[in-house]
Length: 175
Ligand code: IMP
Ligand code: MG
View 1 (tube, rainbow, N blue to C red):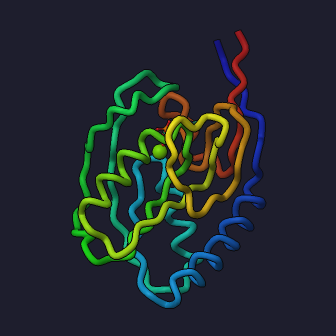
View 2 (view 1 turned 60 degrees about the vertical axis):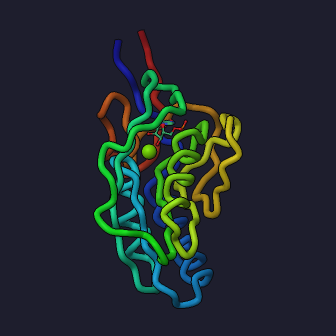
């Protein structure tokens, strides 16, 4: 079995959207510092590009979570594989994710971070698949809403491949 990648969102479209998001987010925080919590591994590409477009003071930390489930469905049972290095208490925390799918991973993560008493807690995602949502996770900033298709690139993987693609594409399997 091999797979082909069909471009869904081009590199140019992504760059342009991230510029817009950077502007919007910078305005929302009114000059206050923002503490980006990037979700490894997929969120890293988006985090770096977004951070470059923010005009407010920025700090960055990383967290890695794994959900127990098969490759294409998350179970909602989440384990913290790598926790943050710094405390978030009193900070304006902005979680930066590659994609919100069922929302289970983010629901857990947001609850967990909330208990650490940040000054504010918001969620920013490059991609959103609203049709797939099973929890009522609130997304504050969305790059693109996409249909229910499995996508790769810009941090997203298919069996750990394709994260490095500069665009977002749909995996098309042909037997
Ligand atoms: P959720 O808990 O169902 O929202 O799952 C979120 C995680 O599943 C994301 O952070 C991705 O790692 C992964 N995921 C969901 N949809 C896709 C996709 O289309 N391509 C690649 N990974 C995906
Ligand atoms: Mg992710």
